Image 1 (tube, rainbow, N blue to C red):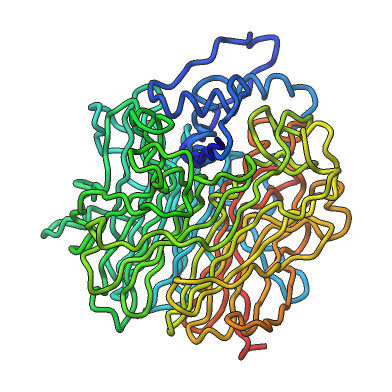
Image 2: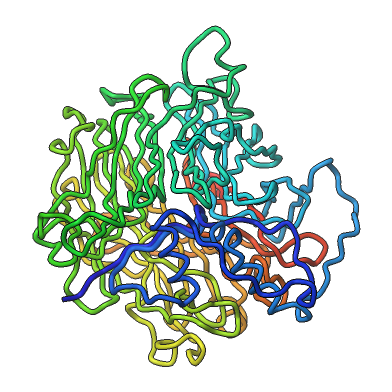
Length: 608
């Protein structure tokens, strides 16, 4: 029997180190294990002490980075790399603001640094949302380690991304179920409703106690994401950091919340406009049934501006396409999941995609599923959600570490990069005004033999590819997969959005096809436009977004950040049809190699 295990996100595991001391001064200390059983198992898998089960979902990158740092494993890796990393030049050179702004232009491309943190702390795993009232009002979010362990950082722009302000939000007055405030925050997410109210959320957790929570805060229309406050209405609402909107909160060593997203109903024709929805993965290490554990997708909604939220319900359901590995009494439960992405259709229907491992194929052959809840139903009830429908197969057979470039045992990567890959969390869904659906993902179905097997011996070219599929019947059936990327090089971590009229699907992704990047590990961001995407004859057009290639992040040039690029980047269309893209970029200031968030806005077709 094959068992597909889902993965926890990177954001929840990331804890930034305050310093890296000399190898002589720091002796190898025993690892400090999390009290939460889900995180303890994730640490064992990441460090090679335990093998993951076939098809097992993994904890996300943000959480994993924090766990590695808090346990001491990240310090051990950094110490082992000491002496190989060159000291960065931190001399101030003509900065024009008190923050660390940077703009890089080349031909018709401009890349703008979003986060304004001047330290060499990690910012990665980014989202972007656009105010439907003002297309120049943008908010972005990222995992941000400027104040220690991984925290959620948020950014705002009032001029279409030309300049940015940023912040660490006031999440940390919230008291978890264990009576403590949180150590860390992962997987920041952001959205606007149709009235221009902004919402942000994240997964809060303790590193050495079991507690974790999924909470949200609000920025009223007119504040435009410049700061966040309590979503509870009142005369001093904008002065208050508490109470927060509590979507989920547990203090159980078997339960861990992960990889959450929120989305507001910003559809003018929806009967539920301005509702806010949240989906996430709920890991349970002790179900007492099936394989003994599961990670289904949960859902909650707020109908009062984020102040209160419905009790979380499982929406990943059961289907004949889910054949093995159930952690529930129902043998066909689709409960080995990770990486949900919610979207709202023009009439208020909610669609949610996710990666699933309840398959009986090869250990690394999984599937993309989708569920929906109609606008006329009460989506706070599990029974209102459709049974899962299979969109496509998902082939996540990339090489496993260890390797010399920073890919440890238990992690999948694409040599010569050591970046953590997880196909389950690279899935996005979009919908046009006719309720035609488009799902994009990346996988390794075309991977060459030379790039399979152990990462230590795998060599490029690797040929990881990006695909999309469409549905013209509200997700009941799906087209075959269309490949968007060239043969002979690696592309990964796509995100997508469709024009309201369905005339074009825009997909952005990391790309090693430029220059010698496939061999050296540098990479770029590419944007693909798919014209006529809901037809059997789409046309493709690519453009390079980055002004120059981003250097490979390795243990030799940055042993603290090596290996983690986040789990996703983001693309959103504004009301003028312009793609707005954010990504984690390793072109640090003053010749450093470290991660920051960059932004680019592409002109609409009518502006070309």
